[in-house]
Image 1 (cartoon, rainbow, N blue to C red):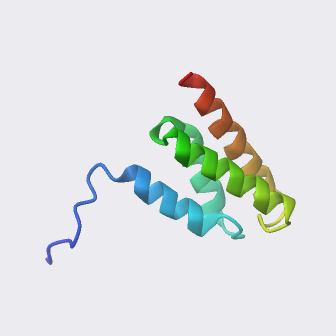
Image 2 (image 1 turned 180 degrees about the horizontal axis):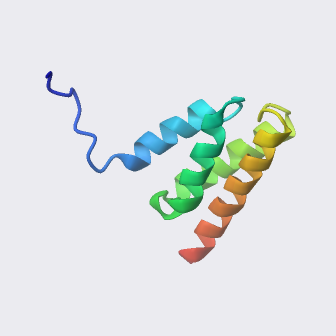
Image 3 (image 1 turned 135 degrees about the vertical axis):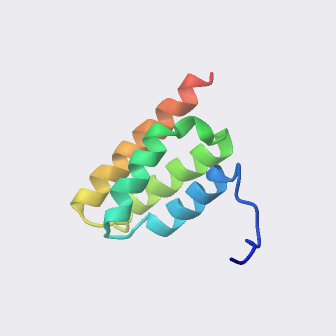
Length: 90
C-alpha cells in the first residue's frame, strides 16, 4: 500500500468546501448528499466559509445555474442551514 501524499485527518472542512464547489450546479445525487452533510455539520464552517457559500448559492440560483428544480430546493435548504448556523454562533 502506498503512503498518502497528504494527511487528511482534521481536514473535513476543506474537503467539504471542495465538494461544495464541485457540486454546486450539478444535476446528480451528490447534491442531496452534500446538502445533508452541510446541514448536519454547518458549525464546521467559519463565518467566511458560510458567507461565501451563501453568496455562491444565492448567485447560482438567481442566474439559473444551480441545477434542476430539485437541486435548487436542496441548495435553498443548505442556504437556510448556513444562515442558521451563523446565528447559532452569535
